[in-house]
Image (cartoon, rainbow, N blue to C red):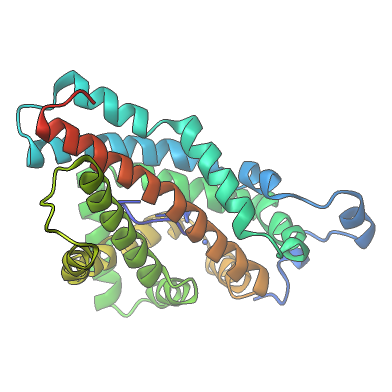
Length: 291
């Protein structure tokens, strides 16, 4: 999974959220089997462990809400703010929003779904997904994140072949750019939410908000780069070189690329909505209104 940005990752997941010609070769599916049961986007949501990814993102979001309160209205959040954040990061709502967006993103890609299902429903695919979820959960511990960053620095210094594989994986799935774009979309949505409630100056235009968001781009990019590679190193460390090569090969197929784009697109919808809701709630809290 490739939804990995901490603000909205992984992958991702993705996931999160992740050398053969076709991914189906790892777990052959006959033409007759494909005709009998063509998988749907909903089937993929189950296989891809989206509920587990959303639960980790929910926990990240609750922590993000605490950080936001400390920065925007220190000492004034309390139970009201905690309740509002909990409702915004409601797992069933996140799942429903993701499922609808994911299905829309995969429209027209039905012919690729059997290959995606074949890869991730196989033992290796399920193992990879579990590693991705656990890595994301582990990185909520600052000590683990620091250790993972140190590991990456060592890999860079030693010119380790595995780091080259991780870099290729990141480039293949456009992890840096897609996560930076997602974070910027979320930040813009936050401003828009605050504006809807009237917490920002009426003189602040959409262009002003865009300029502010773009002004944050270098910091967002640096934070993304500093998090992505420790995540990848932690998630895929247990994989053998052959398993890593197989996952990379799948990512480079048409099916893998379509899945990657669909995951980013769907999570962008989810977290842009969440960020806009957070902006509204934060504005009401700052203005002393009932959330």
